[in-house]
Image (cartoon, rainbow over all chains, first blue to last red; front, top):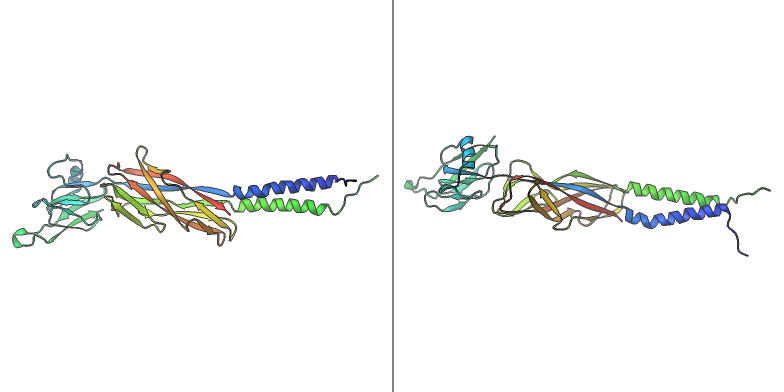
Length: 142
Length: 159
């Protein structure tokens, strides 16, 4: 004769069955995700299309940025055009200040729009044999 | 006639109910993950195009013709805080290559090569774990200036 389960036993069995169903589900339910945020700012380069060695005002830089391309337009960003020998020379890095280059009288530098106040440079005196003297370009920010 | 319940049945019910409560509460405590800081590549000019990489330490480097600007917003790694049961083991899943882009609304840049520290998996030592995330940004030569943003998903599996 089979033993009969009472009502209490049925309740206990149902609870155990429910728990047993929860256990395997718990492992897969504990995977959660989060949204990460990423950002970047691409800035517009400014070309300085004039002989350096003289201070350039913010207005001049502004106009230079929007001026049409021409023979005096240097390569953008990391290259500086040598005005005499027309030899392109790489600027080491476009940092706010100072940027070092060699043997140039004109060129292009990179500036954040709205931050540039002045661009200055001193050029070497070729007649006195200092044509390979580094020329410093100082870029000032406000 | 009266029926009497066997005293031996009650502990079974109580044990089952208690176990159910424990499982539910344990699951709730282990599911906490929050975004602490964003992955930022800072400001740069596209130049001839190239790649910008931000490490899990927030260090920024470039390859190709991209020119990094030191002014403006600085670079940083993303940080995600994972919380749960102390000493629990967790595994991380980062976005696959080709699935995340930054956009300015009209133009995009691809975000690839996600890395994390710790990498792959970790232990919730005191109940929390700081996950640092870096990646590489592909910049085209004609990348249009602007502010680019995007989002990515990080999945945490509680082992």
